[in-house]
Image (cartoon, rainbow, N blue to C red; front, top):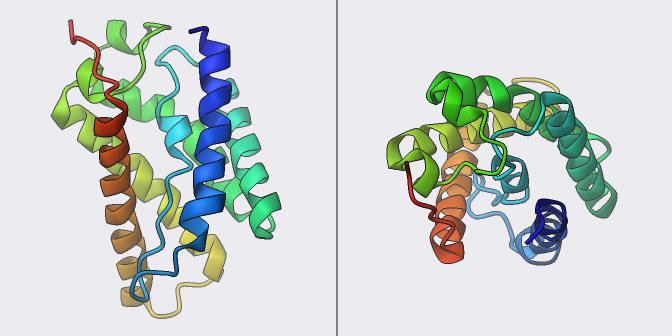
Length: 173
C-alpha cells in the first residue's frame, strides 16, 4: 500500500479510536488517562523529515483538540513530539537504519530493547508536556509525576498491544 494512503488511514483510525473509544473511558484511578493517538507519529517511517513530523504532529493534535475541546493542549504536545522524535531515533539507531525511508520503527525493525526505549522516552515526553500544560503549574509535584508516569505506562502498554495485534513485524536486517 502506498505510504501516503497507509499513513492517512492510520491518522484517521488513531483519531477515531482516541475520540470514540479512549476518551469515553472514565479515568482509571485519579492518575491514568489512556492515550494512543500519538502512536501515529511514532510509527512514521524513519526517513520522515523533522519539518514533516512537526507539521503532522500539529495537525494530529489540533484535530484531537477540536473534537475534545482542549484548546491547544494536544497540538502543543504532538508538535513537540514530532520535533524531538528524529533526535531520539538518531541516539538509538545507527545512521544507515535511521535514514531508510520506507522502514518504520517497530519491534521487527529495531528489536525489542531499542523499540521499548524509543516508545517509553517519547511517551514520557508527550505526557509530561501534556500534563504540564493541562495544569500550568506543578502544584503537588508527587501527584504531577505520578500522573505522568501512570499515564505513560498505560499508553506504553496500549502501544505494545496494538503493535502485537497489528503484527507490524518486519524482518530485522
